[in-house]
Image 1 (cartoon, rainbow, N blue to C red):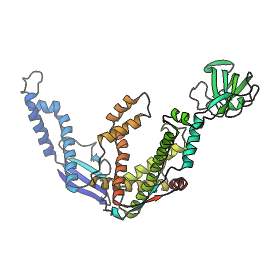
Image 2: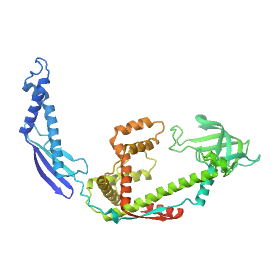
Image 3: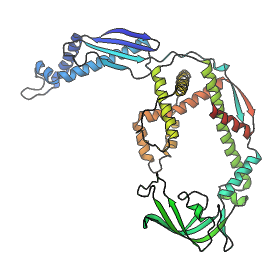
Length: 444
């Protein structure tokens, strides 16, 4: 195999591999000779099929296999000797492929972008601030009040009282579209909290002011994106009978409330809330520390980036942001979304930091354990209730999904490793100061 360099500009590499026809023919003959003793063919005893007939019968397939093996072997040898690590799958094209015939040399053009050498970075030169926020009494009390609201009950209002937003009305209802009752449009003794937005938009508003014993006709229009296609965008009327009007009554903040939420008493519930709040604060503080760490690395370390990786990342960013701005589109049947300069700038940062973190993690021998992967799969499976087993099987058979689940775990472990080397100062702040710091992350 002859190898000739055709391109060496920046990270772009190009090579021409030439496999002489004689070498290829010798490989085919050797493979046929090796297989000959086991070949059976009508009219011949096992192992006695003439070589000419074997070549006619099996030659083209073996020739193709031999070409592929030779090219793969040559590319692997080249990468081993050069030390190049392709950023993406190398592009392999056979020269004159349409006109090539047996007996000609095989000439293959190979091109790729090499991953750049990653410079060393002095991690001890990083300075980080670790924010801590104690669970203050005001925050605990606010959480207790929210729990009391969620555990509220309802008591009958004085007879003749009008229903207000926030009240619960108990109703019988029956819905009609074009004068015909429709399936799923009826209910009895349904407890509906006005203002909860649990019914079609506009439905609850028309029951505000209703009294116990009244019949109310509600007219609404189903949303155009309504789940039932035969109702989407249709106007409907609902004949409602108000059977009760009830006022909300918040639960008392006491030991009984605590028991409803699995605590022994109110003090125990407060401790649970304090622990949960501090865990939330710690998560937000870590996000701030991680952003600072990545910002410093991005500022300190510069190197050439493979254009193919940056371009792919920019398109992915543009596509993701487009779907966030158009949440009603759930498929990919839309026009091409071209990345902006802002997308490309963000893509460069992500690619640079991704390559840098991968290099640091590899040198530090950071790994993702089987247990960590299992936990990641379990968390992801919760998004598909009732289909967990199918999701597990899907993950097992899909390397790309496994990598998507593994990548953030690896990144977080590398961030932890870097933080251990850096200078970290702890600073106690208030909840409000932490919230401002988190808001600032979104503005960057």
